[in-house]
Length: 198
Length: 225
Image (cartoon, rainbow over all chains, first blue to last red; front, side):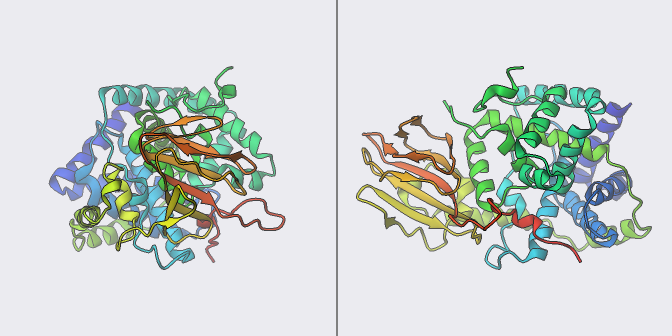
């Protein structure tokens, strides 16, 4: 069921890109806007109006970037997550006025995600999405909490440690245990392989 | 063959967007060389997508869709091509010796060209300003066979080898390798004999705030009022 839905979102997103189809966009909006708002507001100190401003900016970028969307490279949800993350980063930087100098540097340029995808990559993607779906519900609360703080609020491991008053090492091991449990395909390169040896 | 990579902790911080500008640029630069880490980041983004799909929905205002639709009409589609054009224009100004480094970096290089400054007889440095003070971003060039002065680190340092290779007491690093040096590490890198080595380096500014042994993530300093 969820898989069929997922494919629907991919197809709708492609339709937005190829036909500037506003009905398809509205259907995506109806599904993703409330999720995005929930995602952005969970545990954060954003006001509802600010969250909606971000939702709107995200969806406008979705419209603008949809022509470059390819389901072979990413599932709709992955793609939307990336755009939402970039939108939040830019929004926070703009409001924090960290620097006038780099106002023109946007997150999209920093991450530069016009990646080519290989057949190998799409195989990994399919396996990842099944594994995540099968195991996300099994994560212990403490692991899910850490992931939620990082992904939903864009917090670093150190910031999560500070917020929960636990050592950074504990945060790291919870993340790694969660990633293992989800059987997420991660390159073991450059690891101090302690987490992978188990 | 790339042997030195950012670890999963760093890739996770990168993926969720909690790294600040210069470290983000260094990781993206490594990804331009490294398919495996690019796949890892994609896996981590898939988790983001799954968490988004599983988020508890919050009802949005009834007119948000119509407001958004109204804004689409005035959107132009030329923005992304403007960015590409800018990158192209800048790449033509690059020094010859920078040929072959990822195009991605061009947009961060100073428009009037890099200003190389001598650090020692064999090392030159060209700072890159992305407007943040927590980290110093720079290109370092070590002449073929040249040695850098012995130095230690007050803050963390990320280095991505862009051209050539260098060695230190711990190993040898080639194009695309991502090298992390922690505070307190002492090392003396030297370039290989036959060619210059150019690296992108990100150095945490040696500023320690009292009682706060780290640099705050600038994105998180903002508290909406």
